[in-house]
Length: 416
Image 1 (tube, helix red, strand yellow):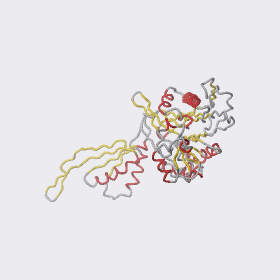
Image 2 (cartoon, helix red, strand yellow):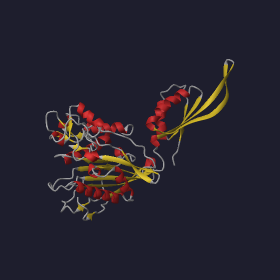
Image 3 (cartoon, one colour):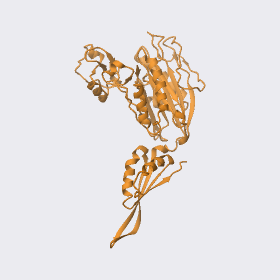
């Protein structure tokens, strides 16, 4: 099942490994004692995004948890960094996969490999990445549950956390109601055992009630007891609403985004997103940031429990991004020609440079404005769409199937 969900540092063993393929699991030796905190080897890699003239500098760390009762337990986290998807130097994939249960390691490894394989063969990936990503998850019945992602955003002199994913658990009202409609009972363990009133269907929030979270149960049984609402490979839980549908969001990168982070709940169980952002911001080298965050997460686990979870983190710094993505933006200019009637003939009396500027529209939202532009072009308006060649090609395809009476001029911009 894939859940898409260490004492004080005695000594830290850390060595930077040479750059290598970044989707292999790193195995650690056994923890010799609770006072030893062992950091997995980390590497520093760089990949260019030539179409948009910026670079990604990234580091990955994956560390097996400390389990005193099962010291031989494998690291069930997996991660995947694949560059040049479909041979395209501008398309790269970063993912963290958190496996739980008896087959957690096998499942997270399988998802890591299979998901990218499907994306790499999907012809629609570049045209509709959101649909391609959703289809890839559904095709493999796999979901990154409790794996969190966020983006750092500069605001003045501060760098703020912007969450890109949200845990799919019964703490969320929408997810709770959805699984109830599918037949799930939602109760905490204390409620199931009669220590708390099962009629109370309010559990506070995940930060304050995380030690006894609401769980999913079949109507007349004491299973499966999952604390999540989206998962991979759990056939029993699927009967009560646990689905593999991903929640997909897109973000427009700008120069205000210095880095992004993808990590498992081994990091975020006790570290808020903003704390992680503050720690990343202290280090120029993402390898140092990975090690510091893993160490802090490990320490906090053992302050609250007698074990730690597996800890996996990817930090990607965005370098030299001074201009927004050319595929994501477009500019529209509209000028108006005013005419007055003289007798039965209409003569153009004056031309007003009344320009309506619609700057930096997201590419996916430009088409309603295109419909407006087509309408205005039949009423003495001159329409100019100014954008990059990549955007204009799709606009040109739309206009090719439009009435010849529509006059819209396309002006290509050349980015620095």
